[in-house]
Length: 113
Ligand code: 5GP
Ligand code: ZN
Image (cartoon, rainbow, N blue to C red; front, side):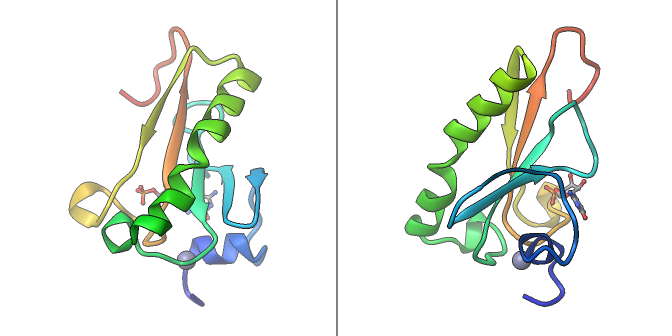
């Protein structure tokens, strides 16, 4: 989709710090680092959000989450992680290309509450 910021990140028209990539998903650092290593995982196929997904779309995206989440947690020495996902404006979605937030948590951090 031409005016989608995450499609532009996937196509490298907008730079990002990439964490993981395969045929189906891209993981990159959120421009706003709620905590160190805050990452977004997006499907390469443009889909607005989970409310628009088929089960297959959801399986493709969410099946990648455990591997990426545990990699980030171990690499950064985090103590845990918040995983969250917003659908539509009322729920806090601001970029309308589906994405999963991975927010590492550290002892004594003052990030996402
Ligand atoms: P949402 O509020 O839709 O769940 O999350 C969208 C996220 O995208 C926000 O956390 C925001 O910081 C992030 N974001 C918006 N624009 C960009 C960008 O150009 N690059 C990166 N890396 N993250 C972005
Ligand atoms: Zn898109």
